[in-house]
Length: 227
Image: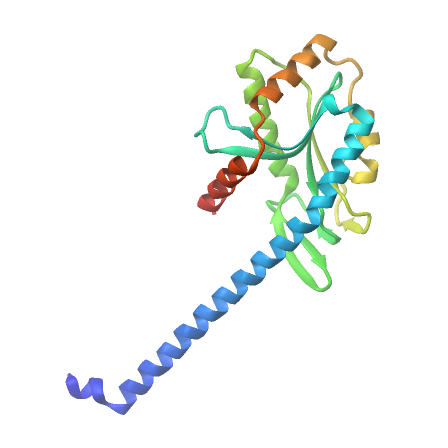
């Protein structure tokens, strides 16, 4: 056995295996770093879009009707589980839950779990925001029911901030940011809920909403665990 371990062929094979293993590790780390860099670039680009979304909505519906960049807890889950919601509008037409995306280029957006962005010859996959927003709506619905509020109209709205984005498929609730206010006003049924109920819903959501760095970190930790 010792002779085999000392043989040139065995030593060479070990060295080759070690080189292959190191190369594989380097490749894995490189891919992961590039992927994280792309995500950070999208997030960095998204900050001005979030500010613009807030401004557009508050000018159209008043600051008291709008909640932006908030975290809402799952009422039937652990204390560290939150839904991260870009914007909520509450008026007499109901509740509009808005998911904001900052992608450019062509979006392949079929009725699938993943959509794909094609931009500058790069392909980046991301979770279908319509599906993503359905989860947000369920969280809000659970909160409203726990507070005795039933049959409130809730709308799923996805908006993209860039005018340079194109889609392979059109959806009624998929609009660009410049079209968002008109869309909300068009689809909402006037006076669907009373003034008193509108105020009550805003108060309920305000009491559940969480903001700040600590809750953001808790949410990110939970998302990483799921991945």
